[in-house]
Length: 447
Image (cartoon, rainbow, N blue to C red; front, side, top):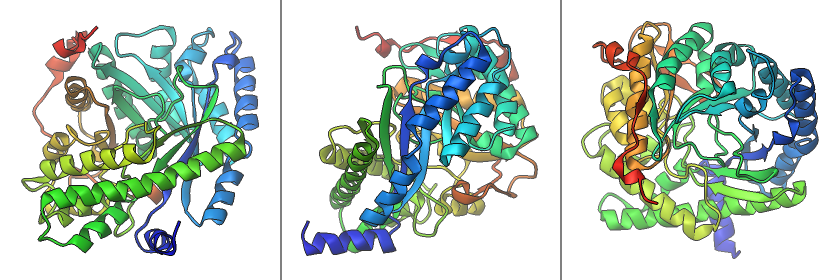
């Protein structure tokens, strides 16, 4: 690396918020299955604490060695519904508590995998896990949960969608932070290092290390340099080149961390993940392209350009790109998104349209706690349909919160502040209570 590249990297870190958002160790718990829940929990605790005992230290050592901030150190595990199905229990709260204790003892920020995948229907442990979510997320600090209810191959499990509206409502009544740690997926991926949706898929190695990079501030600064007179071709090329540099940094950290930990290196997730920090906003990237404020006409097109260019730059930089990889648009975690909501430029319907081409979906959105459970289910169903039809991952992380539209809900840290958004008052109840499945689209039949 020559002097120019070294100075450029230092500037990206110090002035433009370049960081490694997370190193996430995925750990399989399949060998911890036991019909006795107490023995299963003992095995889970022992495996996590032995495999991840040096994860935080290695992350801290790499920060010091390379001078690159590594914001989060996390763990993902096999979906707990699979582990719990071997027991005769009807409540999986003990699994959540042992995950929480293990996360606390090894010092990580979050542990994901209190999860289940039910896109075609429920198996033994699925309903039990879903019913356990409100208490699990209320009584733990570090545990994150996810449910996959749809896929392009199988359609949408509307029974699960209906149930989760009630579950989210119950969780929101117990704790707003509980809902911030829960996400509903279409086309959930097995190697996602980002919370709250991370779980360790059954197709993964026993233990693996995945990396999530970030850097909206770096992309924004690159666009500032080329100015408003540049064509969109140059905008796309600039984003692509910047994503290449960011992903290279992530690959370096991932390879070094996996070597130090003695576990295989998995993937780099090159998602542009914003933070509440000023200048670290995906919304502000879109505004740098020429939008007066995110949410106005042209926003979806600008986001499509950004998402595509990020992916093209990333796959050139790393052979093993995975996870979600694109641009995140969480409202509470993005200062520009918050401003747009408060000014009236950005609403729930426009956010939904944007999710057709971004990573994830309706993310970290606060709604009135009085919103009916069926309406929450209908919001989930709409987002799942976008993912299923477009053969992409979409998700909903929604937070029913006390207060009126326009009030702000303080979540703290990287979770930021969520303005409560208006929800369409018309009822979806009859549609939701039908249940059943929305069939997979015709293009799913590709064999």
